[in-house]
Length: 162
Image 1 (cartoon, rainbow, N blue to C red):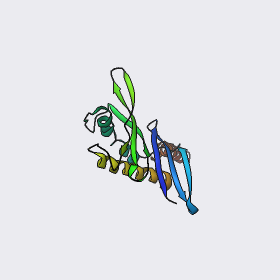
Image 2 (tube, rainbow, N blue to C red; image 1 turned 120 degrees about the vertical axis):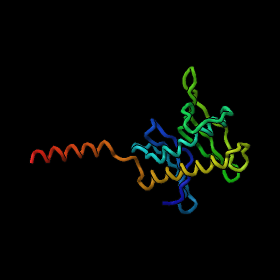
Image 3 (tube, rainbow, N blue to C red; image 1 turned 135 degrees about the vertical axis):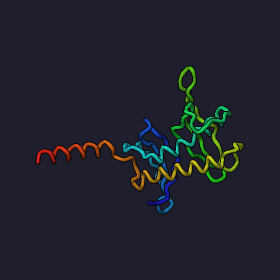
Image 4 (cartoon, one colour; image 1 turned 30 degrees about the vertical axis):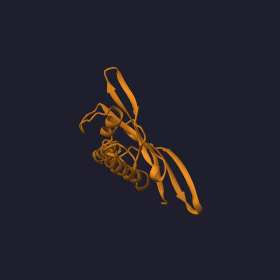
């Protein structure tokens, strides 16, 4: 695998991953790829994304929330810029009395952000990127529970007929 840089990632329907990345190729070439994955994501990737709502709440509403707060939800992030101008935008939603409000944080540069927890956010984005790479390139996915249940029933039925 050549050098891959995740640019965007989004969890769709709480089950699948949409991702955009750039792959550095030989001879100074780059390949941009956009994928809509159909294999269910693993829980470690879901857990990595579950760390982001506290950042969305603070950056959009200047509000501190508990880890268990379900009012805010983050489904994706986008990394932009280069070198000292590189940073991230989180995309998610907030539930209120009138329904769901879609939110995007202001772009936060890793090096020059006023956000007090930019270092923590950076570490959590890196953890999510690690899990995305595990999913995309190392086959880490959700367990195939439905298929295993079907196989158990088939084996049970076969043994009864013998």
